[in-house]
Length: 97
Image (cartoon, rainbow, N blue to C red):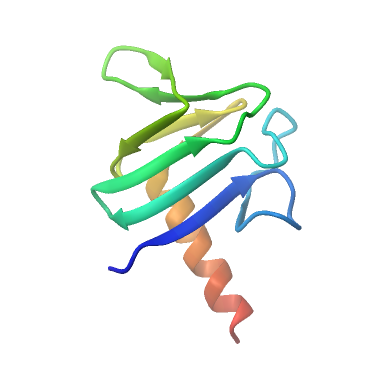
């Protein structure tokens, strides 16, 4: 799988994946995907922050490497990273038609 980058946030004009949640920043996250087991997730100085589940509690992060099966929270929205990748792929395919 070649590396690719996905932007995530509330604004549809500036992101590859849009999260419709007022607590999500306009440009919240940047994902750099090397493989399903190596996804670099970077918070883009969001207002409410970004959190990952460490097995016991939600921990804030600025940048972390996770896998596609890991969960994160942005704003008030809980997401599995695989959901973001699938949403990006669906949008990319529909734009190329």
